[in-house]
Length: 506
Image 1 (spheres, rainbow, N blue to C red):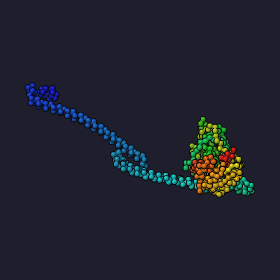
Image 2: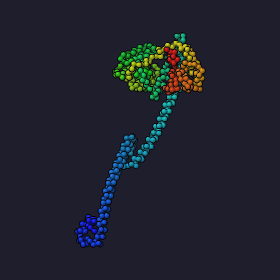
Image 3: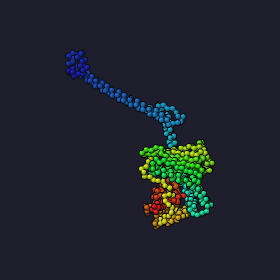
Image 4: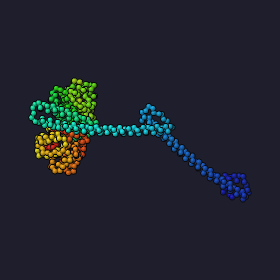
């Protein structure tokens, strides 16, 4: 066997220790081959072992790195959980935690989760109870509004009709007192309903073009008679630089101004009331307007000035007895101004009058404006002869009041005592306008309107109702009514709307 066929290490050893003769012997050759194969196998096993060892070390290192990362992440997560618990929990008895005590942490978290679930359940129950209470309050106000307005409508209507007739001075004075009382009662009902709407968050401000200068002029004119009765003089100061057309809610702005001016008139005797509007600043898109109402009346003590903006509160009980009122006017004014992003301000001293003022930011209109003109001036209440009306009303006294006005206006009319009768009469009659009450036996006004709309989409239907809540108004328009008049109704307003929808008012 040639030495180059042997393992290198063995070949060196053979050349070193065996002579040529010995290397050629057959038994030695066999022996050397076996030993050479052993050397080769040993080298191969060594290589395999070293390769395997290197792989195991690499995998071990990788696993070790992963374990360290996982342990680090676990500790960081536990620390974050502990921080979160401490930030959320206000209990001074909160136990201390360390990052190694995972079982205690998990146990505590489970207790907190159970407590949170219990609190959420209690909160949901409280929320449900509050919603039910709010709904009950809304339903109660709606019912009371309807029940009070129904007889009040008869009182207001009959008082108005009697004032149009010839009567003795004593009777005229009595009627004037009666009208004053009904007006106060009407204001009381409207204040409570307005306050309820605002508290329920159901007042949405409109954005329509209007003439602010004309609006304040109308407010002054509306309060002029009452002011003169108390020996007061109203002065109006208007800045000519105020744009002719502004974008806003003229109804709510008019309500704010009316509350302030009527309050000034109420608490001033033989004095003066000043209504001022002036331009503070103007850009191409927006105008900032200053508004103030100042009077020379009884004034408000400094320690009472915060109280008057709280609901059902006046400066003192003597004021309530002497001047009357609900104590809601300024609360409603304050909340309406907050909806406009403004704040009511007050300067006053007891016995030296009061000044209420605020600023408004309103967008400038494009010149097309709606002018809020009092109903009484928009159309003459004379005659609507030739118009035929279907009056749907179940309350006999209200039927009597309404028919007296319809007869006075020379209107031809039929009466239906409920919605069911109204639908049948509509099928056989030819009417220009329907005056529809909402709450009636047999069939209410909503259902009757839906039935009539199935037969005719064009006939004007005006809700004439003592139900004055927004929900009732929204539902009335949803079922297809064209307009809404609240009892006790203003005769001139009702006359105008019948004329408008019958096309006889122009």
